[in-house]
Image 1: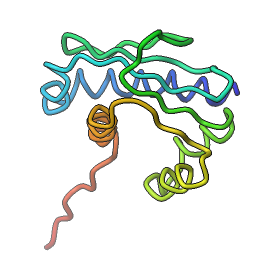
Image 2: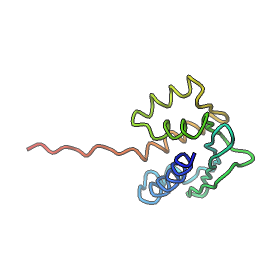
Image 3: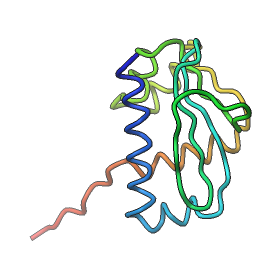
Length: 128
């Protein structure tokens, strides 16, 4: 469970850095106002607020998230969120119900695009 909680905290820091250092990411969150939650089935996790161009997270749960990712347990959440082949791992978790998503799917898709700002982009190769 500790690895899962640490990963969620790191997700906050990585997203905050992306907003701060990437003008496209900053523009992407600028006018968004959403609260979402990532948790385990027993309620352990964090909720995230995107408001006024900033992202903040808190331990625990919020009363009315726009959407919630609920993982079967902390180890499953850690495995899915830290997977190298994240898309297939994510889809498999959904199919096997190791991950259940509830709430506004438009905001879920917005979040998926936000997370894309964390993906390393290959540097152009120089040819000589």
